[in-house]
Length: 156
Image (cartoon, rainbow, N blue to C red):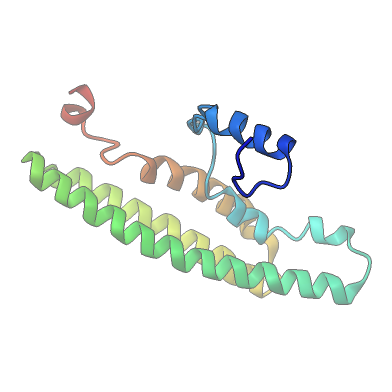
């Protein structure tokens, strides 16, 4: 064994074996909801299991901060996705203005639902949790594909 900077022979052999493996990133299943965590952040039922009120309050505050930061990032990403959709339509010369407008309006409606649910959580009103869950699932389906509603593109 030549001097390669490894501590011992076993470490060197393990490194060689691992480097020869071809690791393939698995594709995410379609059923994965990337935005489902948003509804969990404002669902306080799990926090009821925490006995210490100080800890429960601190965790709730942390969830609140993460929720609003995630929502800001989601809005930023949605803007980029919608711009990309318009550019792709322009590049393919397949303008479907009514579809683009409908999808854009629905996406922003869903984000507003998530914002209202977050505001309700701030005021300790848990009634919007199921609406936030439904909005996150629908948002995933609208954001996942570049042209979810255009048959000419999906048939190609």
